[in-house]
Image (cartoon, rainbow, N blue to C red; front, top):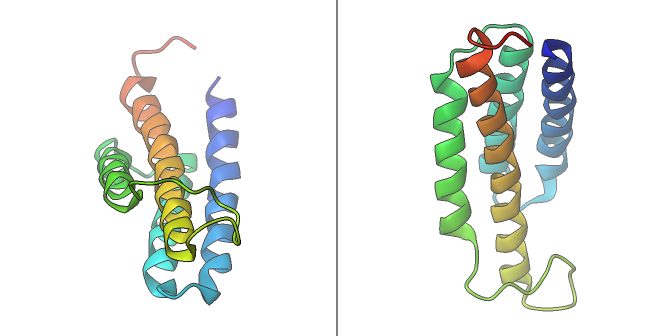
Length: 119
């Protein structure tokens, strides 16, 4: 089971790294590149057993806070041309933080309960 979680962490490390690279044309690119690079480092830290429980736990909480802060009141989807561009951009960013928070939650739980698990 541990190999499955390591694989999961490795896949998301690659995905977070790609996502960081895709932020270059974003209006606030630096912030989002840093966010996704930190997520990459945390997942890599998990893969190599170098990250304590508290790091992904804090990243999870920050991601959830960011999700609720950024999510627009009126969700208009993710496709440009179907609503207000600012609203769509905020929804995309909020959902990116939610995905990051979910991954960090899974990693934090695995680190926390790994020693207690027989699997």
